[in-house]
Amino acid sequence: MQEDVLTDQLNRPLRDLRISLTDRCNFRCAYCMPKALFGANHAFMPRSQLLSFEEIERLARLFVGLGVRKLRLTGGEPLIRRDLDQLIGMLAGIDGVEDISLTTNASLLTLEKAQALKAAGLNRITVSLDGIDDATFKAMNDVGFPVAKVLEGIDNAEAAGLSPIKINMVVQRGVNDHDIVPMAGHFRGTPHIVRFIEYMDVGNTNGWRLDEVMPSREVVERIHAEWPVEPLEANYRGEVAERYRYVDGGGEIGMISSVSQPFCGDCSRARLSAEGKLYTCLFASAGHDLRDRLREGADDSELLEFLKGIWRRRADRYSELRTHETKVVDTRKIEMSYIGG
Image 1: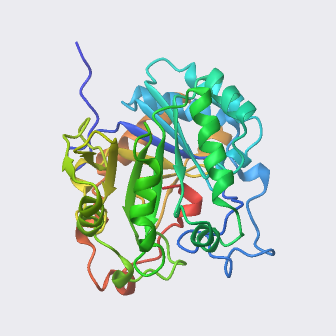
Image 2: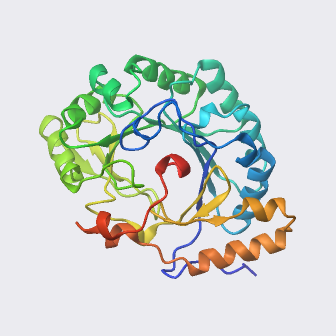
């Protein structure tokens, strides 16, 4: 007899676990880790506070027992974490895991590293790239990192078989929206999928303003004017991106519309921060401490009951409730750099 599916207050199952490996990053993108607040003197977490690989593997195994089938490794920048291939090998050994992916800025993705990650069991990667124009991208990452090096990382991932490769571009009106069509054009005719993401009010340090959000419909209109596109069906329930294909067969693009078209109703994602706190929403203000429970000797049955209780009580739907006044009235939210995207 099949065990009942674990669901939350809105009847959403638990299917995806996003695991942050570090709060550190070598970029200083203004919408995530603005240099003014994450400067040279910023105190990052000491290594002792981060979950060990063994702790991550144990928690991931428990989550898989509750219904999780997809694991995504994030940061900060996850490639900063040493011996990442060892962790991936441990996660790949968990019975029930169907997909292991990695979100990265690809700045550190050498061919050797990409091959090692693939051999360990990584299935695919998503690359954050907020502009194809070099000057625009350097301004966005705010450390002068060139586009060419990211494109080299994407090529290395492709050569290692880490596909399909998705490229995420966060679009800010008046900042990098002029690069929408060039970005789409650069990857047209390749197997890579560019996904255009509406600028979101994650955390409290990015100075988010609603007038800097470009709704996905405008992005589609710009691309459609250059190369006609048509919508595609979702691959599965809870897929965050709306899919489109070029009518002429030039490939696929995606739109992630958390602001203009919230998709909370199908959200099946939980997020584990680098220091072991569980968040049930990208926009959460507080997490549930799992690290201390692990280190204080909780057994698996105790941890499972704790996790079940958290998910069963979950009623998060921040994006559906977002208003012009949200930024003013909302409590402080966890920063994206602590729990990934």
